[in-house]
Length: 364
Image 1 (cartoon, helix red, strand yellow):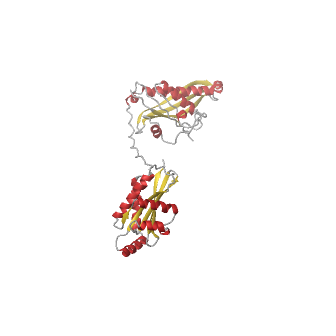
Image 2 (spheres, helix red, strand yellow):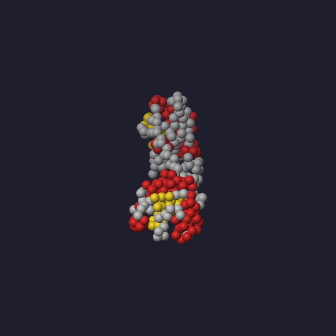
Image 3 (cartoon, one colour):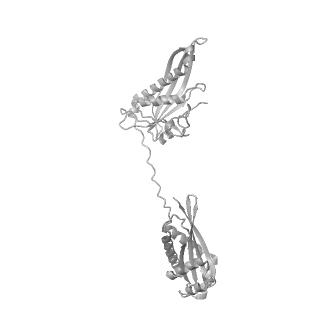
């Protein structure tokens, strides 16, 4: 199985190539026979050094990407992406691919008395954005001939010398290639516009939409319709509804700092919506606000407290009593505001309609 090691480097091209620096990604691959044991990380280091000595500023990805840099001779895995995608991730102008396509140990004599190593490397430069090749070459480097005793004693050194020579030749030919000088990198596509900022706080629009939705549900509720029609028939006019406001039951857990102002604005929206519906006449003033606080405190409906009922009757003999509250719950990355509305029939003591609407808002 062919072993491929992908490396990425960032480099600035020679000032003779362009006034502005060009970054490239270098992909080193072993396409030689499986039995050819080539120290690919050593070759990567050699190419890095040779390219830097020929005018390139080099960044070895094993020193810049990942967590276990220079852990061993095999290095660390790089992201599983194509060569062009790797170049784009590094914001490089192009990608240089250097592939070892052949590595041989040729012998002379039978039995062998001499050895000669050779390596064939194909390399090319491609534009990172289009993937189109700019230039490419194949070189072959041969070592001197070595005796059996020399190979036994210095095999690693001879192999290192051969790879360094190949790296040196590749770097010099790339730097000197006229097509590299003439290459104008394709600019990357423009970045998409940033998404609009998310407002983590409850807004007046949130309140208005929730109230409109709840009143719409109330108007189509069969229980409300039956009780409303009965009350209207008995009193012979549009019922009077007291809007007792919206109570803050968030317990200070909400990230919304102006929750009281929003609930007050929501109460206004509720009153306006009821009036515009032509179903009710509506009232809302300081006396009703005080009564509402007392109702919430004692936990009783208006009909269960004679004093509260008398106060309401003195306030225009209302027919319906509308009250609501807002709660808050943290739910992972979101916050859940829960708006509840309830409509009391003051003639029967029944809650003739109740509904809740949830408003999800990000916490941060």
